[in-house]
Structure formats: structure tokens, C-alpha cells
Length: 377
Image 1 (tube, rainbow, N blue to C red):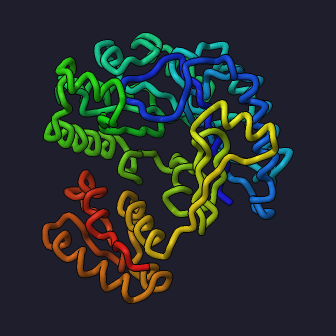
Image 2: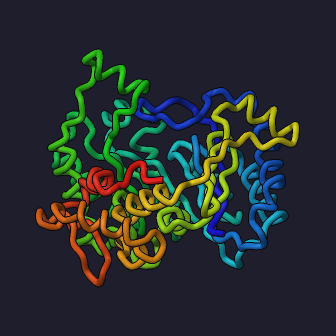
Image 3: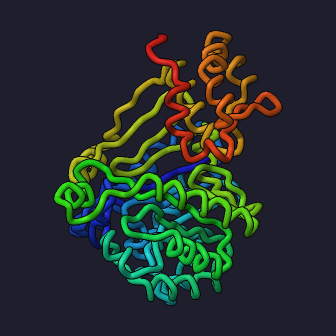
């Protein structure tokens, strides 16, 4: 088994673009921590004597928990599962939570990887997104964190309305100045029912410009590759030996258990998702019930997922694997549908592996959907 994901459903405030499950009320924090620990215990049989390679605290804002709470949950994993000798243990953190004292506390814990939500080093961008931190906190936390942690990732967002290419280049340069070995970067996406969606509809904020967003993506790719980063997944760039083991496991189809409200799980055949309601989640766990819905993936579902994740990564889509695991029908379909993208130099085949070209990477999610097979089984 690859790992355990633990969803911490609390934030100080709501970012305008976020559609993840969280609450800004901390009233149920202690009950939630106990419920998370109990779910970890209740689901130990799912590991089937397999070793846990990664523990990942996502959210929400995991750094909103105390170091003692995080240590308690990590200890519960160790009590109930076989954990490899040197697991990757990541905590997502916001700069405003990462004081020097807190960073030192975390460094003395089992946490060995920080994923820091910088998003931008510019104050106007942070205000537009309603981030809880300011630019000074972004600088300060990285200056301190790099003294105590070797394995650090930071998040940046591009395609912000009104942001020029020159400003975006400065954001990347500022990130590189800290010697960070991993960067995750995402286009600002307007999700339905978010504050950002409402502001755009009211004309308060401009709609992100698709052409500018694509230009900034290519600036990102070129700049990071020039600085020794490997573009190993559409939104992720790592120096050698610093790829995210947790996220790579998802893209490579490994098993994982998701703990907490809204967390997803995958056992190789079935996909499951916990209820996205803190009160219902806590109540169910207290009654020794896991509030999860599951779906058995059909062979077509698994083919489609493999194509989607494969095209996003440097590992690509193995045509041998398509034939061996899914059959000739799927291989013939893929070859037929991929032909026009190969002709347009958006895809390439090397050593019988289908990959997105540099030109095609920004478009790979859309390309993948055109390669899907629908309603076969």
C-alpha cells in the first residue's frame, strides 16, 4: 500500500477560489482529532499487512492543528499499520502558521516534508485570493523553514486576473531564490459556487484570460527546467530525488486510504469517499461506522483513469500495459483516437509509451478526455 491521507477540515478563512471541504469554525476540532484517530484504527484491516510508505496531512489547513495533535495522529498510524523505516510524512501548511517556534517543533517531530501554500509573493494577489497570510509572512516562513527542513514544496498560482507575465516571472524567481527542491503550480480555476465565481459574475473580478494562463504555464515550465527541475507531472516540478512520493503513488495507481471527512480512498479495484460533513462524520465514527460510499471501477473506468493520470506524467501511457491489462479493443481505440493528436505533435510515442509533448502538456486533460472510452461495459 502506498500511503495514508488524512484530511484536516479546518481553515482560518475561506480562500475565494477554494471548493475543498473545510470549516472556519474550530468548535469541533478536538472531537474531529479523536474521530480521525478512531477511523485510522477502524480501517487498519484494509492495509492487508502491506507497508505504509507515506503519510500526508491535507485539507483544509493541517498546520492549524497543534504539533501535539499531529504527533498523536502520526502515532496512531504507527500503532495500527506497518510503516516503512523512512516514510515520507508531509504536512500542508500556510505561512501564517509557520513561526520559527512552530517550524522547530515540527522539525523535531516525525514530519519530514513541508508543503507550503505560498500561492504568490505579491500582496495584491494574496488579497484577491483572500489568503490568510501576507507577503512578509511568505518570505519569513521560507527563510526559516529552509534552515530546518531539506524537503520542502511550495505552491504557486498562475493565471491570476491582472497579473502580467513579468510579475509571474518575478514570482518564480522569488521561489527559486530559496533553493526549494519542489514546486507545485496550478492555474487559477473558477469553481462553481465559490466566492471567486460570484465575484466574476458580478464583474468585481475579471475572468482569468486563457491565453495569458497558457503563456504563464510555458514560462513556468521553461524557467524551472532551466533551473534543474524535472516536470514530472502537469502541475508538479521536482529536483532529482524530490518528487512527491505521496502524489506519485496516486498517479501510478497505487492503493491508499483516505481518513477524514471528504477523503478519498482506492484499493486497486474500488474507489471510496467519506461524507463531506464534519458533524455527520464525527457522529458516524463515534458509532463505529465508517461514513464511506464506494464504487467498484469497471474496466473502462480504470482504462480512462490510467489514460488521464498517465498523460499528466513523465511516465506516460504504456501501450503494452493497455493491451495486457485492458485488451486489444482498448488498444485499438486508443491508437485510433490518438492519431490526430500525434499528427498535430501534441502527443508522441517513444518506446511504445504515449506521452504529451511540450506543446501538448497544457492541453493534456482535454486530450485525455478525447481518448476516453465511454459506455463499453
